[in-house]
Image (cartoon, rainbow, N blue to C red):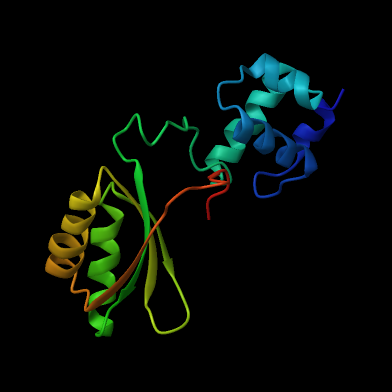
Length: 160
């Protein structure tokens, strides 16, 4: 039995913790018993390790992956964003963080400031996001948008 690993400190993690995280990444609906069986622990030991991984911020959130079409967000696009003034970055990031159409925001190298992954219902909604929200409310000076035609791999299992 691997219960002896329960003695690790809260700030440490090991391969067993990574196995647990991998299991819940693949199936967030696993019961403690099922999780324990998969990693060779009792259900209470597996549950305690998972609780600690959540508490320490290693497991950010347990959630369901839902079809974009079902949520009326079938259009996917990547938007490169340019901000001309350094003082606009903080407000931009706060506004972007609160917008449900913006799934990812990355500070990037090159001529643009940020790269956004967005999902909208259609091109009219995308136009509103760019024109009204990004350029109208977020002090964005320039955008370059790439609309996704199809996705051959789209997995969001690991979050920074």
